[in-house]
Amino acid sequence: LIKEYGVVHVRNALSEAEQQDLWRLTKPRVSDPAGRATGFSNFSISEKGARRRVPEFDSYGEKLFALAAEELTKQMPGDDECSTEPSYQHLHEIASGKTEIALDEIRGNYYRADAQLLNHCDCDQILFTMSLSLGDDCEFTMGKKTGRSSRMSERHGKERTIVLKCGDAVFFDGGLVPHCVKRVIPGTAPRWWEDVKVQNGSRCVVLFREKEQNFYQNRLL
Image 1 (cartoon, one colour):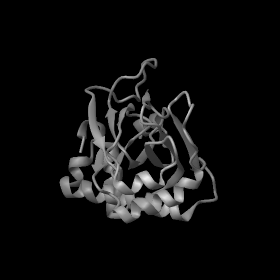
Image 2 (tube, one colour):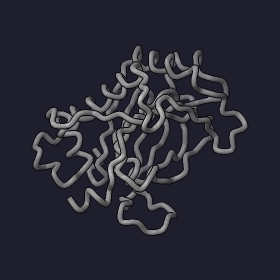
Image 3 (cartoon, one colour):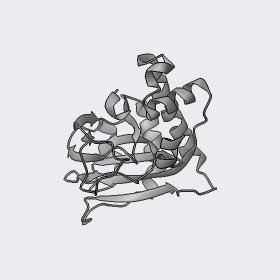
Image 4 (cartoon, one colour):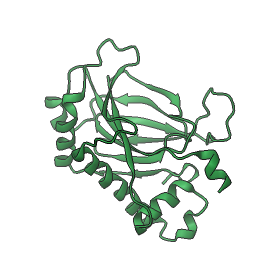
């Protein structure tokens, strides 16, 4: 847990068989990132607000949110412990059955080995996000102040960096917590990855996002 930002890092969230299955589903939507100025290509599974869902991906998203909720309740079993952290409170409500997982947008990025993802917030709203890594490891940093004008919603402070390995998942508020991929670590993927990856790529991330919530309205409740 990274408590100051409401983060849950679930190591080995998916088994190797599940990793391969998720990649089998994702690969047809992925394009070669060669020549991309950003260092990565992106893809969409379910658009924001779309009524039509892709059940195979929804199943993985729901599983990952449930695993994060389970991990949190193991480490912080008391609901009172989480009452001051909206992200943890949300997971506790999922674990207790009080709140249902409300998947919305599902999308992702496919990185070259030399790629970075610049520090940013995804929006100016609460955006509970599950990030699932496939392929090579990466250094993922949260909490660094963005270059945006000062906003009440942005949760910055001490930078915290974790290494995300193939099959790892991380739950966080992508709207309010600044985050970036400092670097991809080539040669760290499991053996199965090299034979099936899309050429010129190194790492894939699949993002499962719940519906946005109005930060400023929630502050008043």
